[in-house]
Picture 1 (cartoon, rainbow, N blue to C red):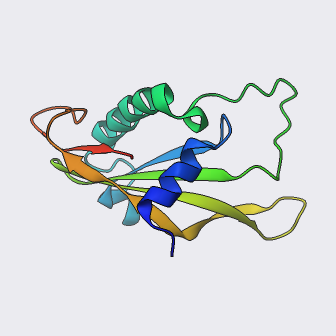
Picture 2: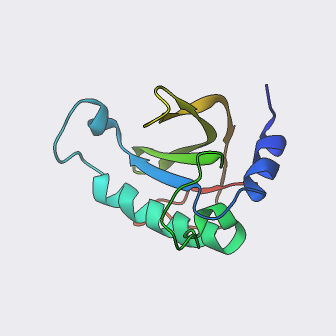
Length: 135
């Protein structure tokens, strides 16, 4: 198992445009069309994306002008779950291709970096005070 420091260091070295951020709320797991807190988690992920672009190349748009994605490049997934209005749970995972080679699906690996909540920075809108930071 890779510890959080190792995976964060790998993420720091990742190429541009390899990060995908997924915003999640509990209602999405129940199949709700318009789950409660969806707008809030979308706002959190937008702010998180802006913050991460300053420090991590993977969060910045790819500068590949041809539009072809290189299958050899590692892909990264940041999942942001707003568990309740004051608790945000994030996982950062490296993804591996699975399935047919013509259209491989990406599957997160079992190792991931969890984040620490810190009350010094506030990116959660409203009255919430918990935030997430990577590294």
